[in-house]
Image (cartoon, rainbow, N blue to C red; front, side, top):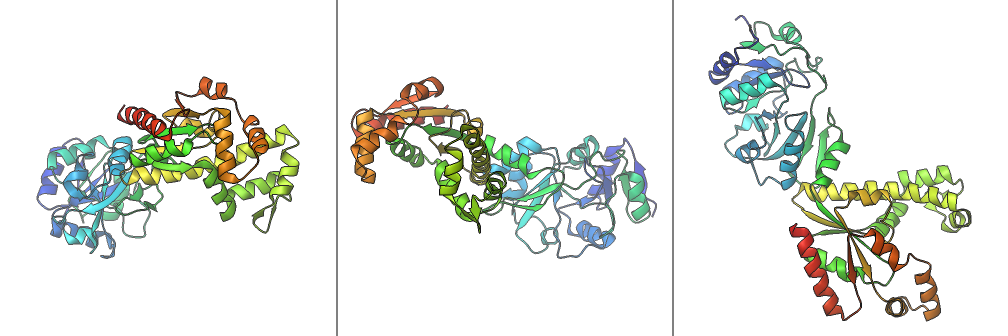
Length: 401
């Protein structure tokens, strides 16, 4: 057999694919060894030519996001979000496979990886063949991935029917593979697309409402309203305390900036407080460290929620305005209540004195600060029932918009 080199006659390559042959195809990452993904015999030849272990499944090249419904089932909303954001591009999305996909493609599993390559010639081949292409990298297993048609011919000349010469691949690194078939999502292979970009795209697919206001203003009732509407509610202060308990990068950064503030993986709050509360500059440094790591953790949780169908989320924090967290919000809602009402709630909730409660409240930002910086204000100055109705009405309008 002589391997045919194809440059522009993509219809000829489509004929080869439909006849059960193998065609090496260019992508933005590396060349792939493609065959009809719905033809078990063609797929078996791919395994044979590559020397690929039969226990390793193959992904399918597809022409666009519409293929998610065609070849996947129970597809989470996050898969559509990522396909719209990164296809064509170096991302393989793993979803539950339809039963019609040959078992040899799935290597005995129940999921399939779908990928839309950013190559005009390969996209045209997908359109003309009207078939998904099983297409691992066009190299013998264990050998370097090919970046040119010449590399492919060096491996497989005379063993495959054709190679489409699309010139050198621009990236030269395989696609990133993300598994969205189960929760939590997993990066199965870190490739050309960084996980941080994936996370940002998933977070952007959510409507995220920030809820802020002073202690005792009634944020809990507002957040209950959002939770009942299906929103994921994240308490930034609770996340901070979790990160303190877990140790890791945040505590490492605090320890590096404030020596002696972390001992045996435990934050020494009194020692740290003695340093930062007497110096506004060092307190600002601590805020920057903690907010950065809290926002990073919030992003992870938001992205996870979005990946599996979530649409709405809320972030609860007194200090949202002017921080890194504010950039994650679609809208910011301030909850305000009269000082005496707030103080009464603190006394009842925490058993503190009225004097202490008032001092604590007066040390926080005034109502005018929230009125100047928030997109919406909820006044909690009547009955709980009236306030809940106001919350429901406002959040319904926000989420519908």
